[in-house]
Image (cartoon, rainbow, N blue to C red; front, side, top):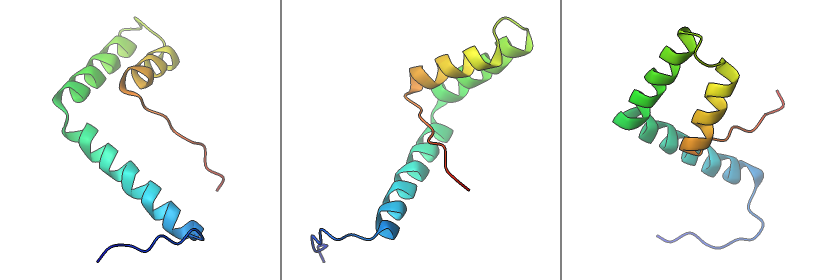
Length: 73
């Protein structure tokens, strides 16, 4: 049955939709071999002090299109 298009969608529905997208994205990345290999390589470079954690994570996030919103509470 199709959803009705109610413009007064509650915040709860939007939060559920956003959470669903985030969970799908996380699952995709968890199963992606390239992502896992690059993440392991990044951790190795950090451990060898070849790059700072902050710089490595920022570059990794840009490459994979990762963005994390800060949540209050």
